[in-house]
Image 1 (cartoon, helix red, strand yellow):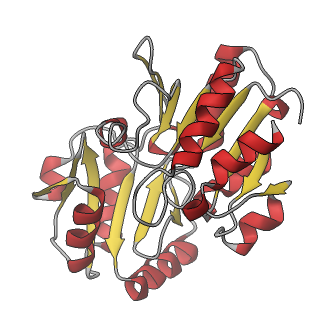
Image 2 (cartoon, one colour):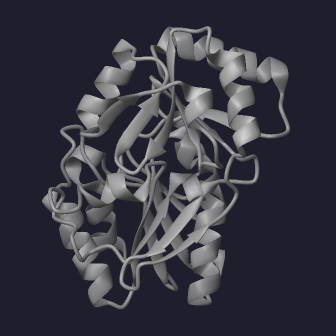
Length: 265
């Protein structure tokens, strides 16, 4: 494969395995491409502070050149610490969404660094905070949220998630869009926001074209990214993601990202 000038990877189910570790093969693959002058970036729905605190555990300290966080709302050059923000949800929109969904057994959340701030503590919220190693905080949501945020997260059981998505599809709003990033996580973002928009910021900064960007992913929140750039689906990816990708690699548990980088580039 020629003309790859940037490699971008999702985290969960892609770069990180089912035990929340980064396989050695992935680290080797990242070291290899960077030795060839190709920068490596992480694209995730997580806020930067939440990702940064896990880099040492994943053996990725000083191995990531760029971060596309909050599903593209925040782009960070890790070397210079320069940060670019775009397409946040307004306070008014956040309050409106809260009014539409707060009657459900779900935790409506915003991120503050590595803290997931919510109005309601649910079993799904407790589980999410535990597995992601993030702090909990319960507040009066509308009183607390007095500014714009990159995104909102609704944490619930899968059954409640189905109701959330059903309501969203009935409303068909113009001011936000909503998608499931796992069986318990529903993400809400500005309609103009996506990982694509964040990676486009890097393309402009690096003076490269979309066809020069190789991306790895597994879930529907990676769909746009994988369809707009050169997409590589994990073996464990959902079928819709596999169908839009040009390539497929081994599963996240088998170090599929590193395997592809080491054997294809």
